[in-house]
Length: 465
Image (cartoon, rainbow, N blue to C red; front, side, top):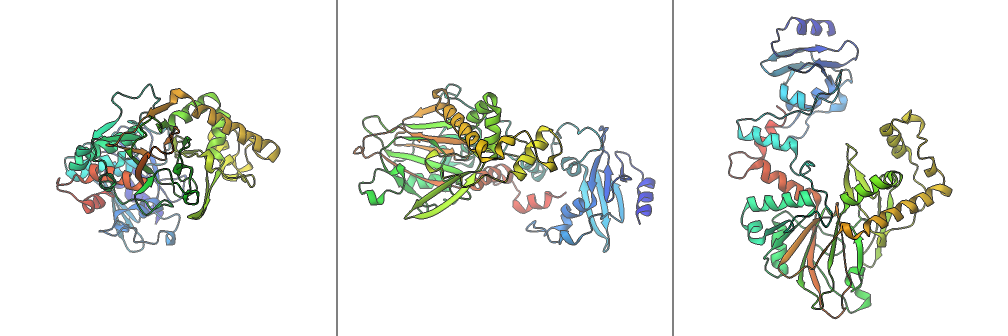
């Protein structure tokens, strides 16, 4: 069958590109693209796994059992029709169609130097143009992200009127993009009520239940000690931190509305960009930065409202090695009960730094392998973290007033407050919203373009062509 398939490709006329079986790698197809010297290599099982016919036409969910397919699966027929590659698969001649654009966009293996990033073409169809935006992923794009210090923020600060947020999808999208790029946005001119705050939050999606309530909550000084389950319910100052690190999935978005301010001027809010903190540490102390991306810090909440715990590194890295999340709260930090095994983490360090065979385990971080050196290394790195977090140049100080709603990314921006008089009546109302919800809303407003003539099923059908 392999020889027949190879002959098929050899005698098929191609005017734009060529597709052949790989002679070096079993189960692999080699695809060339116009203007590119390198060729893309695809495993047959990858193409069969991701073809449109392997998914339900309405839901887009996979409808084949991928893991019943042989790892060296190859098509029984193949031909180019214009810019589409048509493949037939054994044993039932299931047909797959891949556009040249799809293949180029999903190429994960090249037989030469990888080409420059794909420049997405402009489609004339409404669905096609929105698909280009989907692959750029408006919710997680980094090229528009602004890493800020207090002195580099624009004046006025990233803001939008409450009415623009509430009355138009364009205004909502504008505000969410500010949130994406700066990590926070303020809605000005809001009615001073919990109901108006909740209405603004519901424009994004459902509210996230937490230990503090099923939706909206209120932060104020509680008179009875037995009711205090968190330092936030006192008048004490709070150092910069992120919330709910003790949950397996910390809420992605936090909302504050100061419905009653401290008349004496206390209770100022503090914000700091975790990406700027990470940048400073990586530049000044690379060893501490690497440790803070590896060592899962334990957190806990123990109270009458629940007993929960989870662990996570301070700096979460994405697949490109860039910081994608920042998580830290010194007040909730739990005890280190034992050293991590480090198998996966240190193997990754070794692979990324090119220091040798990743399977045998890395030597660059040998000080993390024994408690005598690992625990001091952790405390040293946390001390570096605290020192950078306390720099006034990185801290934005705000005095939130009634009528201003602050929304910020709890996976990026650290927040805190100055102390205030316990009898001032200072009150914040707010809630949590999941990261998936606010990022989904950006994609929805960008991709679906309400009233523009396409819906989610149009997009789903076009994802695999």
